[in-house]
Image (cartoon, rainbow, N blue to C red; front, side):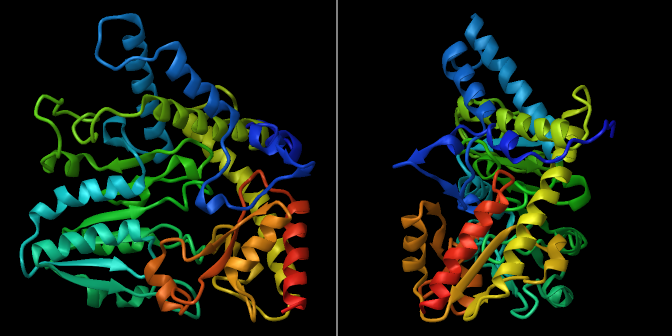
Length: 424
């Protein structure tokens, strides 16, 4: 990676890249701590989406100028997305969102299953990477096995893999980072267990992609899905599909549609504006790498993005450390996830908690009254919320940070949590 001297992280400069961060309500600044559910959109994203919708608004495949510009944009986006994932352009598929993509591919993958086969899904996943496989398993008469979590360490029970994965296993699905616990998982270890028996391996990278570089070659999976609206882009889904799997699957599509990748598994005419917006999001990450990570502007997109994640991760770790240190001083607060500030490499900056005597929804409303935007509930993390005993009891309060958050904002959240804890 070609590098220059790094610049110190500058909150004001980073925040200026996001138009929404300048908005105020009745003179009060908005504090966005809802990043795990969807980040704010970088200005480069809006510019790219305008380009698609104004400068060359046309379907692809035509002889005329705007259609050819759409074709060129399509190719550029796929090349950029491939660099982002560490894949090839013909291994990239766009869709509406991760949930839709996983349901779409589950129909094709499950065609190969037979009664007596088995699949492995996890107790930590968002239900987008569980329900599609459960439905398919029920339809195909396939046995479901569960990879559990350790409620003390908030990690997967990796030692159970040898008893779960066997020659009958046809699929292993897991998540890269938890949208409730924040845990970063050793997905390469899980994937390796699946691939050793010839199973299709699927990784949900929705919560990891906003925080560190994804490398599908190192992970080794067959399919990996993410959502650009979780990493500063538009509402869309982006998936890597290993070439061997893409070639093997019979696509669900209309007959005249092209049978080659990246068109083969695209579920209908794509949103060209969302695709160009995703390019804008990746360009934003690359800009962070150039400005604060020391990457040379002419370097590859991937190397600039990697440098951007190095810089933004350092900032996010500082935010997380400040938050965890402050949380440790409050009475009656229970954190669901890794709470050791020395173990920040094991988690993303997503924090779920409860305060004794306080309803999570009411706490979220108290935050909203201060113009601090957070979530309450279980966030479709159906199994893990059930395992922790919070699914049917109001869920948890979720506070999540992105690289546009500041120490001042962390202190605002801690101050309000202290008030809520004191008054419980």
